Length: 109
Length: 119
Figure 1 (tube, helix red, strand yellow):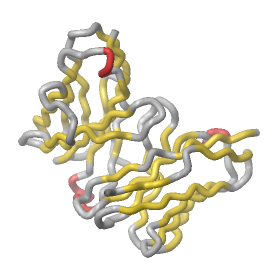
Figure 2: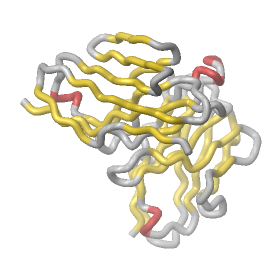
Figure 3: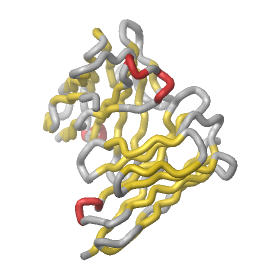
Figure 4: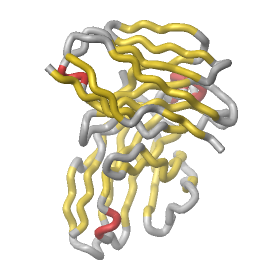
């Protein structure tokens, strides 16, 4: 079966750095997405990785290792507004998005 | 980025009534739109894939007679929850792919979501 694992919840301090990991086992791979979702709102696109390596976009970076079935989302200089759920999703061989359950990130002052 | 508008954002209805939710792509054409449902503290669950001009493809376990989907144009898809019951109360979200971006990019643009409460 297809499976995406990410931690249920993480806590970090304002101004610090946090890394959210995601491992996946899917039928085929056509890219991995990270989305941010605030409570009661729709997800918003953060990043898309299809090749191995690190993609940096401002305070957020995303890393992918296809051989390990592993990705992480790195958030730097954390702000209170970064408190949200972060969803990892993989595009499988049929171009269907397989979603992880999400990681709830709690930022403390 | 591309904008997807979803309406209404909140709706409260009585049990037994039907509710229609609209999903519009405002500045791009979308041959494919997706409808998701999210239960509290759970991830998104794909309900169906809506294709312009043809019947929607429903995921296993989703009642197509209960959740009617119509994709009449390249910018509009509607989800109608028929004879709603309290267990249908949920957060419904639509998303669309930008036709010009190509099917293979996979990037989805999401509507704002609709919170349905059935009394």
